[in-house]
Amino acid sequence: MSGSNQNQPPPQQFNLLPKIINGGIAGIIGVSVVFPLDLVKTRLQNQTVGPNGEKQYKNMLDCFRQTYRAEGYFGMYRGSAVNILLITPEKAIKLAANDMFRYHLTLPDGSLPIIRQMAAGALAGACQIVVTTPMELLKIQMQDAGRLAAQAKAEGKKFERITAMQLTRKLLAERGIFGLYKGITATAARDVSFSIVYFPLFATLNDLGPRENKADPPPFWWSFISGCSAGSIAALGVNPLDVVKTRMQTIAKGSSERQYSSILDCITKTLTQEGPTAFFKGGACRMIVIAPLFGIAQSIYYIGLAENYLGIK
Image 1 (cartoon, rainbow, N blue to C red):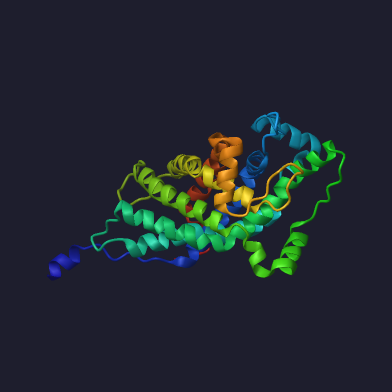
Image 2: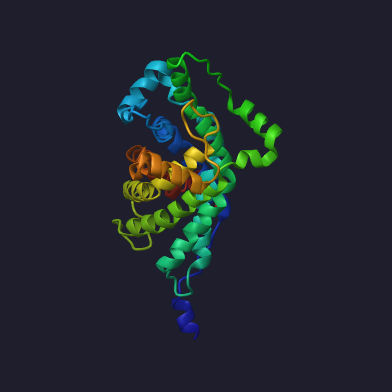
């Protein structure tokens, strides 16, 4: 018995604090790089087709051009402050929680079946919505303000912009803390579904990476490619849920745009009035956003800046 015990590898330790720090750093860097693409994605998802088939934006490039022309370079980063502020706990929770659940769901023999990997991802996705929902709610209003302002100007109307802080105060005054959690069910549906697909797929791809020793992590560039690939596939798969979530969380609407009373109402109205392709609006843009966001975030997370530079073990 003693000989067999000596041959067993020492039990792995799980340190939550450096994981949280790494996740926060990864989130800030990732979102700073891809935010303009995310803004375009939001505006494309929110625009509805007029009775004669007219659209405010023809495509992703046209949305970029119109936004830059009307709002300048910094207009592409509208809403980024609240996103960067909240992305730190959001990514920290998402990445660290997935690692924590994977650690606790690993079988005694060291294996982690795909069902358990999916369960770990689902639990991580459920944990993050505490931060994701208010972050997305505020970000969407800031991102979509330019589209609504342009629409109002074309109609000869006035559109008053408000800051994220003003909107937060308004929601808290009118609806209390629950005002910041508008669309939480749709957000949960998107984030849990995304995490179920993303984390097992990333782990599988990352494990295929080249390494000198089996115990060593794959190189930085391989984790980046794995994060990009898994992120883009998961993003496209859950894009219909993201469209529903974005529309449910958009508070200010254009003059001809619809309000939705529930997720089912949003799905039904979108399907009957715009067809099934509407659920893939901004899909290509979302893939372009998510791929580098998770590629950057995941590779930086796995570098382990907290462990390497802050001396946390």
